[in-house]
Image 1 (cartoon, rainbow, N blue to C red):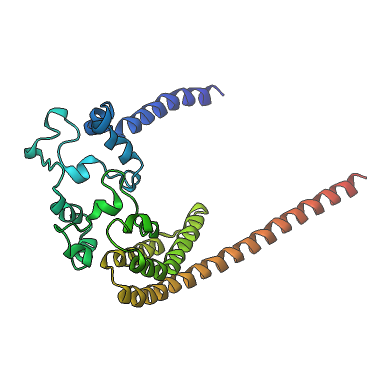
Image 2: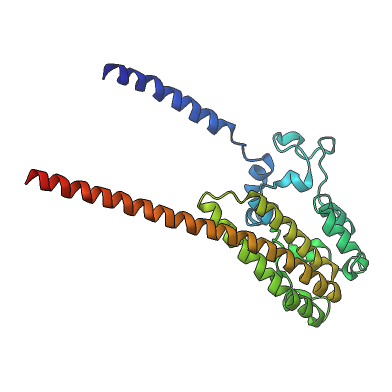
Length: 266
């Protein structure tokens, strides 16, 4: 008993040291967020918008777009530290294209891209600048598209893509469910990520014929993932059956032992 108590006294401080080390290893909030978060109006608004963005959800902070040193306030906006600031309107596609080269290529070849500098839309027209929105069919809507032109063509593209989008979202939900059960879905997740990116690139081409053709091909690839998920379903079903049988056997053994014990006692 005394030996166990001594061991416990040694382990408790060790656990506290490890916990404090892990806490200190967490990345501190960038000086950009600290400074702008305390400022009023237009200087502080970007922080609140960014916190609701897909960039924040994926760990992309201020320096991911604007550069600079996020750990040192005096040099945070120093060009020598890589600070880029905000791009002019005509430079926005190339600015965002540093991380989204495939989308940039599709955009530049589209009617939208050909209108760049002539009143045409850029990335922030649809996705926003700080509250960056995740690519989804909800971005193709009458309110947004009608700012520049009739919604009819955009409606055709959106309607053609809705079935595929629903298919992708259904597979995402199934993968999330498997992950919560401890199933290894890493490979399937990467495949879906690649397929989804290929599909979402169609948003930027604004080409109705290509949307219809590519949607068919992408749905075929998604069907392959469906079949693999069906195999996982079947395997999970078999495990549940085996687990149920094992539990039933153990309960039967326990009941038999109880009855035997009661019989001999009587």
